[in-house]
Length: 181
Image 1 (tube, rainbow, N blue to C red):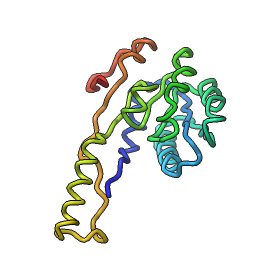
Image 2 (image 1 turned 45 degrees about the horizontal axis):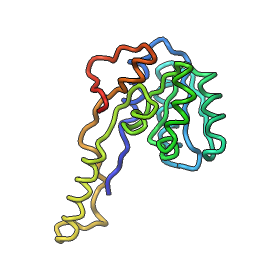
Image 3 (image 1 turned 30 degrees about the vertical axis):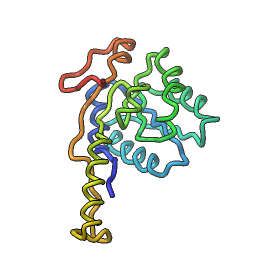
């Protein structure tokens, strides 16, 4: 297999790039997704090493998501959302709470960023799918033993920003970031 895990240290660094004067970071995720917990725990460690105060804001399902997001937005300078499937499916809810408050969010991938984020260090799901296909071919042709194949990661990561949200929040995109198309 392949993994969509982006370099979490670099995602944490993005918060420092975009919001060097922020003091508190709210980490929003669905507690039913162990992958999200892993990402949040690691990003929190990197952010705390940079001097930020972090608080995790888990929600168990979409029934309590809005109140948790509101609480996080009320008590944080900036928010972080990992590659969380429940958040990805509910970016409209998150955006409807955070954008009117001018609450910035750095996110784990492009899909979430296009719905509610300011910026992301994103993978290409196309590239990951292509790599998984190549791996499958090598297994089917007998060139590789699936039990011995290492996990493959995205070959590159791209810094991207959401043009509409940046405009609404009065932010000038940083150099080196591409607009999400």
